[in-house]
Image 1 (cartoon, rainbow, N blue to C red):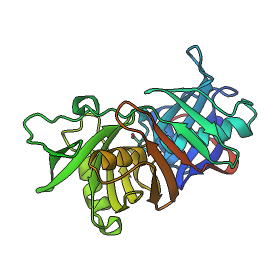
Image 2 (cartoon, rainbow, N blue to C red; image 1 turned 90 degrees about the horizontal axis):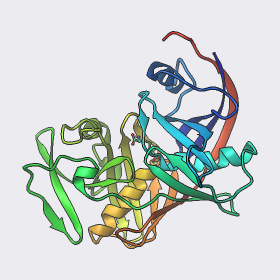
Image 3 (cartoon, rainbow, N blue to C red; image 1 turned 60 degrees about the vertical axis):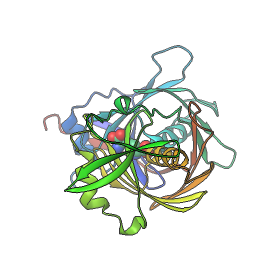
Image 4 (cartoon, rainbow, N blue to C red; image 1 turned 180 degrees about the vertical axis):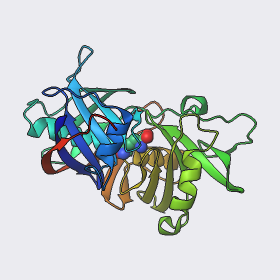
Length: 287
Ligand SMILES: N[C@H](CCC[C@H](N)C(=O)O)C(=O)O
């Protein structure tokens, strides 16, 4: 089966983007894993599938698959790549686009300078809705935030839990470059208290408007940037009284600018999106 694709990235978080309006896309998890494989396939953190809208009042639907082949609810960097893709492909002439995702409608907007701003919706802050199983844990409050003690390899790690449609566990570290991202990230990702697994963020507060962030992503491992992770980290930092909106989030792949006016308000994310190359792949039918 031949599939046309566009290779893209948002601050180094890389994607294979597929137009499912003009070609039929229905792949198995094993085929998604093959596409994501950096040696046997194309290579990507996530795959993004652009579809016709299903509901009223929206322009498109977009679906997100992690490198491990699992479909997930939201992808912030992917939303920006999506806007650049549908614009470059002439699938829309709109600058502000309403797009359905598994976790609801988001509104990305192409700015005059080529950056893309996405209304990522309001964060979900009730632990059970993240979902996070807080049963039996003694939390502690820090300003407006609730911190939970997570047993990670016998060490207690205090985390904030935030959903941007997808689940995030955010911890504050002294030095993000020295943080145990690759050793602790996988343990947090698959911790039993996260029934849907979780994206693990490690945030260093530089000042009240600047942080360094590394994220060990659910289903992908450490990525160069995580858009929803940047949103979740800023929400947690503002609730902990450590940050003031807007916040520049420095990731290994670039800077994402996040603004949040407080509970119940949408998180606004601004950042880049780049198309790297077009291609076509012959997908094995049996994997
Ligand atoms: N790994 C994430 C999906 C991709 C999110 C990330 N790439 C972003 O830019 O938000 C999850 O399983 O929830």
